[in-house]
Length: 353
Ligand code: CP3
Image 1 (cartoon, protein in one colour):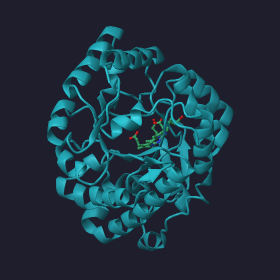
Image 2: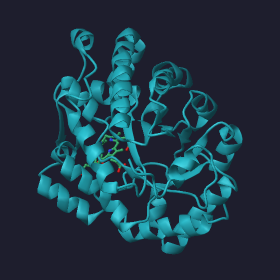
Image 3: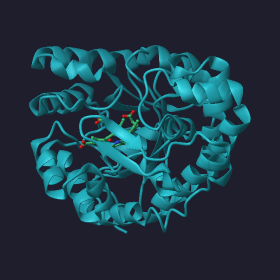
Image 4: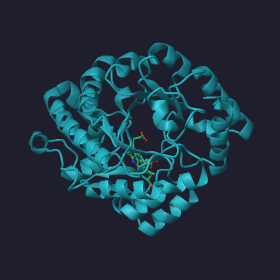
């Protein structure tokens, strides 16, 4: 395969020198882009978009055509894994994701198995190969998965939740059942990420969106320890390069030392942690990814530049920072403000190598 024209993202993840701070945005492809909405309308619905490699390739490339981002992220969703386990994912209009068969009964949990990623999730691997061909070495491609705990939240609740009542009931009343789900998810996620790496993903990220809803003790037992097992089981090198791994727990700011200890190359931060403080706590071990408030993009061009400056200054000089938002790009973001953001990060961080 051809070598990369822009590898600043991969170098920053390994805390190697770069001539500016690279950036990409969580949910950089999505409903804030009119071209995304047009492709989704052609697909008919969101899941068809995910399951059609040509269309997934098209929407992956849309934000890169508009903005000089330093990485592409596979267009898919974390919930394709429980879908492949047979839970029946669907997206009700305006309601977010739902499962036809949430996991509640003991026998269903005992029957749960990790899917073969090259079979049931073969469409994802086809998308990865197709995106790599389309990128043609311009920027690296990020693969991703949900964390075992975050996937379990959706699998047990049957969709999004305000209070995680069902999964927390299981956690306290039947921890054995939750551990059984998490063990299957850990196998599934490890196999899934490794299949993405073999198909061409050049870095991977684990999204632990709901780990922050746990107590410190439960976080370590039910989320972090399983992510550690995954990180230990990942393919570390491919095409002659390290395949870096990013771990992101939303709301995990209090546990950064523990997160930085599981062996990942980088830790993602939400906007509630000061990135300079995070660097003082863990920045000699891992790279940091983040952490502009996604709603900073709702300000003016000047306020966006100011907020970008705050994050860059707080991180300080030296290597090991990948700029990102602290969570996904809102569907109500003005695409022109993303132009301001991307230019501001590149201009304000430029330095001699
Ligand atoms: O970052 C990217 O550009 C890659 C694409 C991506 C999507 N989902 C596309 C998507 C990624 C990395 C995800 C991850 C994901 N999905 C997470 C973890 C990160 C996070 O945001 O916390 C979670 C929890 C999900 C589950 C999920 N998928 C929810 C809760 C929703 C509905 C919320 C919403 O924004 O509508 C989705 C749907 C979804 N996934 C959309 C996109 C672009 C919107 C679907 C649409 O077009 O209608």
